[in-house]
Amino acid sequence: MTSAQTKEGLKKLPDNCLEDSIAILDFGSQYSQLIARRVREASTYSELMPFSVSAEELKRLNPKGIILSGGPNSCYDEGAPRLDKDIWTLGLPVLGVCYGMQLMARDLDGDVTPAKESEYGRALLTVVEHDTLFEGVEPAINSWMSHGDSVSKLPPGFRVSAKTANTPVAAISDDERGYYGVQFHPEVVHTQDGQKIIENFVSKVCKCSQSWTMDKFVDQAIQEVRERVGDKRVLLALSGGVDSSTLAFLLHKAIGDNLTCMFIDQGFMRKNEPEWLVEKFENEFNIHVHFIKARDRFLEKLKGVTDPEDKRKIIGNEFIRVFEEESTRLGPFDYLAQGTLYPDVIESSGHQIDPKTGERIAVKIKSHHNVGGLPEDLKFKLVEPFNKLFKDEVRLAAKELGVPDGIVRRHPFPGPGLAIRVIGEVTKERLATLREADWIIREECKKHKLYREIWQVFGVLLPVKSVGVMGDKRTYQNPIVIRAVTSEDGMTADWARLPYDFLEILSSRIVNEVPGINRVAYDITSKPPSTIEWE
Image (cartoon, helix red, strand yellow):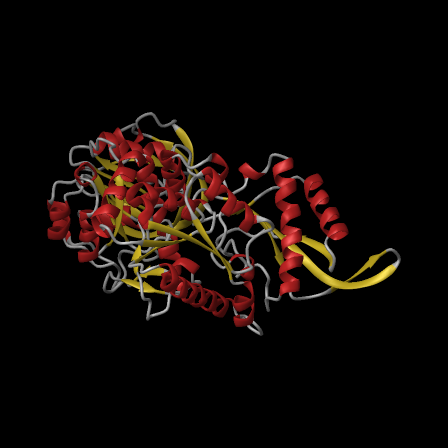
């Protein structure tokens, strides 16, 4: 992300959000996006920028405060990421997190050295000075640490405000200048009162009016769509998930009948969903949906394909081709609307920071259907109103737009659908097997009132076989893996601790009711190191 792109992104915000924004300078931390999300939870807009942004550029953007993220480097290393030192002359409050705190100390005439003992994971933090940052925070809290360096000499004007058993300088503060540093990560859920610490910085130190709210975002997004699209027609790929459904509601409010919703049944949806989707939108929401049956052509394209990236790209390309064909029949259309989210954009490009240039570099993790499979000769202009929002923010927008709760709380479902949950080659028979197992998993979760406690739950069909015994006969069949995770935004996730008795019910039903399955496994890996989806 260049500074010009950052400026353009901020220009699109409402005036009241521009006045009260927080700039987050990214030094490559895995939690940088999470900092942005936490600031937004404090009802203040935040934008992630490369650490190489100049003081002059920041001055033009006019944020009310700056947060320096963590990062993998040591600030004393040659070639380590550096901050434009003129930023310290802007008179803005600054919060340094982990590497950001160390860089602050070093830039302001303190010193940072390798710690005698590295500190990773949970650590008991003792607050020794309840300054503005720690106002209302308990005297001793659990914090999340991840560092091998420590501040060994305080910069002039600073004092120690918190410590741990292994880190005598775990937080520093200069109330007069509004400079604060924390060696731990307040943005992660493992840090007790972490959100309170961030809110104190945003509201008490930076004096933000906390005007970033979903009702204002929705109003602004509707206005922007009207201004950009005018009287042109927009085609929306409707999947029935919360993202595309919320986008359909927003676009319908913005441009009315100039919106054409199209549901392409590519054969990778869950059991009964295509029929449910069309009936719901047509009869309950009064939003017309064109139903396109295309199962055979998608399956034909995937014949013999096993690589997950190839699957995604083939499905993405074929999806657009169907759109182009149907737009010729129903159109003309100028715009294609997508429910792309901020994490989709970040994860699809695998953004990392080049420590020498400060620019983002791409290290591919996987392609998302919304952003990774589009062909270069795309014949539509894209409309993506949600590409700066996190999933939980889309759910809030959905409530503002009146999207029914049953859709708002639906679990995320990938664009390529079951095609990336059938590991290996996708066939009609393997899809049918997974569809039945997945139906049982979701049905039992809802019956046992676990569905809303879980971020995502689904089945994965593996391309291997194992020996089993059914009715005194030997079987040699496939396993189903159950994947259930808890999360807040999908960027990180932990495996759900489902009750053993419940897992036993799932196993019993799947093995007895789904032909071709003789074994059920449960995935107990978090993200990272794994992704939520298997492909």
